[in-house]
Length: 467
Image (tube, rainbow, N blue to C red; front, top):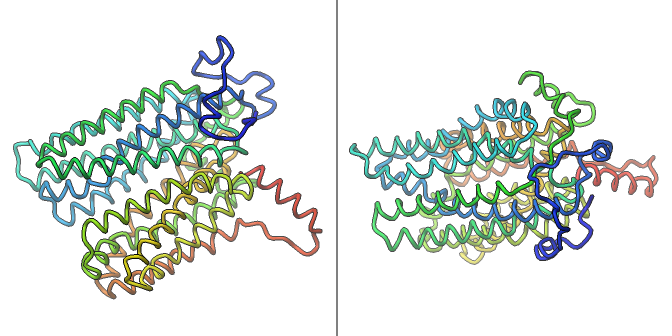
């Protein structure tokens, strides 16, 4: 059942519940729900899950915003070399790529996903705590940096398992035709807390001396992570029917082949995943170039560079609700190709002017496009998997993204050392443009032999199926 009023936070919260409604955290579909598929959900359950999914995301993203942007700085403070700083990004990406498919196998063997999400997400967030005490280890600084890389890499394994299970779980919680609007609104609140967490962390790191500042930072992040787990435990899982879970038994290779060869979903999932793989490869290819360009070429201050990141984050947050409404009207694919086009030309366009005002505007454009990318990619990763295969689809997709994130920075560094920073930005733009060619393979095209009215009806039907 779709939400029957305008999707605002107050609208979702203010509805009065009937006495005794919603006491169970797990909703087992009845016979009517099984006949209607995953769209049949009571409005009270949707409203309840939206509230606690949003609260959980706000607490969790506060923890991530406090810590994640400063891991590289923390590594340098521990005496890390440039190799260890690079490994801090690439090693977790490799671990994720290796963990996602076994994680999908584990998730699809469980009918109820919420207990699994609570277990593995809790483990992931509790590993922030040992990071707080690395400076106090009785060893040389270089070894401390290695311990940091090892713990962050270890964290990625429970993070991958909980991420796959969480995505599959929330895919069943909300109707497909409202996911764009629901998660657009959720992403706005969640993104805002992440930006505020990063600003608070920067202030704390400046006013408290090392290593006490980082110790306090990781302890506070652990507390917010635990608060997120508490909110998550209040969610009410919509357990899929036995028919859909009974199919999720073949081995990893068989399930991957099934995703790519399925008559209804396979072709679209394949080209959607390949286009995102190339786009994220383009992101990684130029990832190390931004600080080099800002510091060594433009000689910008730390305050200006920090303001760039803050502005991009705010633009991502603000645009989430807008893109959610566009998804509801036009579909995820339209949003994805518009935002992908904007990010594809971004590296080349960024060098057109060295004016700080121009660079601020470009950061706002980047954040605006990332808000649409994040929303459309999440929805399409679920839309292009048939019922019972969402965990495998998310796992395969994330595995490809993490492989790109692991390989691309090394190749980008080699290209930069050989050809310089400007040609690296142009090469990154060319790589990103290839993603548009792959994505065009899943876009609808009107044909002359189809009357316009009939084409419009088919278009509306496609949007209702894929969001």
